[in-house]
Amino acid sequence: MAEAITVARPYAEAVYKLAIANDSLAQWSKMLQLAAAIAEDAQMKLLIGNPVISAKQLGELFLEIGRNKFNTEARNLMMLLTENKRVTVLSQISQLFEQLKAQHEGVLEARIVSAFAMESKQLKKLIDDLEQKFKRKIEAQVSVDPELIGGIKVEIGDEILDASVRGKLEAMAVALKS
Image (cartoon, rainbow, N blue to C red):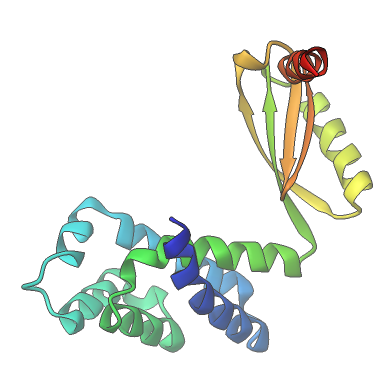
């Protein structure tokens, strides 16, 4: 996984710089998501690993599936990725591009895990509080994990805010052992 990210990073950064220069972040976001979806298709995965299919044929197939949804630069990127046998990292390229785009737009991605389903008012208040704390817009991905027992756990980048009962019990156990 880390190797795929390492391979994908230069492509994502190059596409990001091109998108900034052409003021086309949203367009590139859609094109990369489409390309990643094509690469993740089960039938396409069979063709990607097939030695009988040439890089040119694979690239042309990508372009045919995407039809008019890819601009000239995206078409060139698809052909470059197929020639260099890098189609398998399209998903990582798309993810890294989205991270760069979010940073540019001043948006932080948060992963919120709650012991119980949160009401929309509670979630809105939590997101508002996080936006004030981090002084940036927050896009939240919310999930439920009953193993937390109670409370919530928030992950933003490499920062973790653990206000769960389970987290407090684990901290107490560590304190008692030392």
